[in-house]
Amino acid sequence: MSVRKAAKNFSVPFATLRDRTSGNIGVECLKSGPEPLLSIEEERNLVVHIQAMADFGFGYTRSEVADLATDLAIHLGKKSKTDKPLSMQWFYNFLSRWPDLKVQKPRSLELQRAKATSKETVGHYFKELGQILDKYNLKDNPHRIYNIDEKGIVENHTPPSVVSSSQATPYAVTCPRSSTTTIIGCGSASGAVIPPYFVFKGKRMREENMTGSTPGAAGTVSDSGWSNSEIFRQYLEHHFLKNSVTASVDRPLLILYDGHRSHVSLSLITWAREHNIILFVLPAHTSHVLQPLDVCCFGPFSKIYNNLRHKFMRNNSIVAVAKHSVCELACKAYSLALTPSNLQSSFKTCGIYPFDNSTVSRINFAPSTVFHTPCEDADRSERVDNSNDKTTTSSVKNFLFSKQSVLTDKSQSTKKRKVLSAVVGGKAITEDSIMEKVREHQVSNPPVKKRKSANKTPKSRQNIMTDKSSSPQPGTSGIYSRRIDPVVDSSDEENEITDDELCCQCHRFTPQELEGCQSIVFVSWAECTHPSCKHWVHLKVCTPVRVVRATSEFWCPCHDEKEE
Image 1 (cartoon, rainbow, N blue to C red):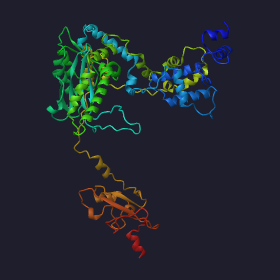
Image 2 (image 1 turned 180 degrees about the vertical axis):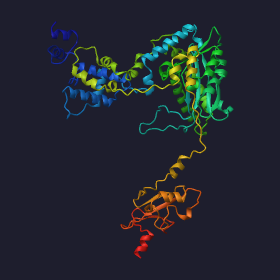
Image 3 (image 1 turned 90 degrees about the horizontal axis):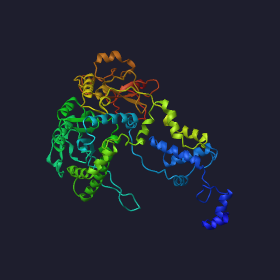
Image 4 (image 1 turned 120 degrees about the horizontal axis):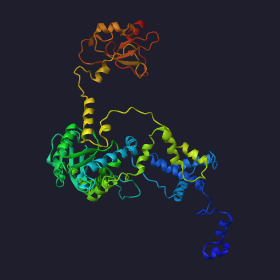
């Protein structure tokens, strides 16, 4: 049909439809005004690059995206270096054209976690876990699969966002910094939760520490407030076994937990085997994607605890800081966070029950690919730059690839340390073969005990006793300096120190009045400012002058005698 008839039938302005069909305005243009600086094809490649860098853990900020687009436009000849860079208005228009992009705050990921969470490591973990689940018939018994994890909490909290006046930034009253209290949590794949177990900082356990605790909760104390090998063993023996299902030879229990050094020992492995418990250690630095409590439970727990702490401070503002309220508030947050639905969802997300080795998102492996060998650079760069559009110009690809230095700059390989986590990570340590490897590791790497030497001189004493008199240096004033009297015999010091470095009055390095002194004495020196003298003298001892100022002149007594 004609343009006029189509405009009438579809209620489209005739001029708008005519401009499109005649080519005056691009068919893909969706708004009035000038067309975007970059074409859709160029922006598509830019979007792919931005998404890839964010997946690798090195994303761009808003201003960096605008600067990157400006550099791309200059590279393509669409802007000159003297033109103004693209503004934030361009950035927000860019986001409106590409709804797949979103400005959000990333989660922090430690370098060790980024390196360790690789596809190979996670794949090996699921292979070992699947074999254990099949061997002990645990795939259909979620009530016999547990996860244990530890969480540190403090009295001072992170204030939540509050409603306030728009004229000023409000304050939030918090407790001062306090000691850390550890809470040991545990839950099963069926949704059953083990009551919390607290580790308070102190020397003796008090009843006040457990004020307001929920039924079944227990606790102990340690010097630091953190768990250790003894406390973890005590937790398993007296708390976990009491609240978990009964284990037997035919129906053992599986415990998954991180491989901290306080969690792995031959005595613990022997105890677990005697009580029909399988200890499975997660791969090192992968708990943020493989540990159920870390993935879905302790995040809500921290938010709930902060909110409860905030309400507690508001309701008890006139009361002194109550350190015994930690247990009560933590127990409430524990009950609200570790619900049956959250526990079941956490085990499902981590692929433990139902067992599924493909549940871990591939995006979790992206940061680790940055640290792979250089031979894989080409494959990664092709995966990042390829936008499945054959019409993309090579200049845009080359420019964006030059910005991906994180994929090409390789750090020097370091020698692997013989650590215990490399032996037990991703394995069931109660198995005979792994237990033997743990024994061999402990034999070949015995713990080093630090011994204090009785004859060791403190560092502060060593610095004072260091003899620097061989090359006297002026002080910060440029006129005098303080020399430190070394604790040595006078006969030895006179053999080591030249005559020019002795006092011009007593002809000694150490004043005679201080001979035999058993304490450390600081002796002030001053240098004569007369050009023909330049002698050194003891202040206050060999001259009545006590202090020499930076801007004043000082004549030594021998120079005064010559003048007389």
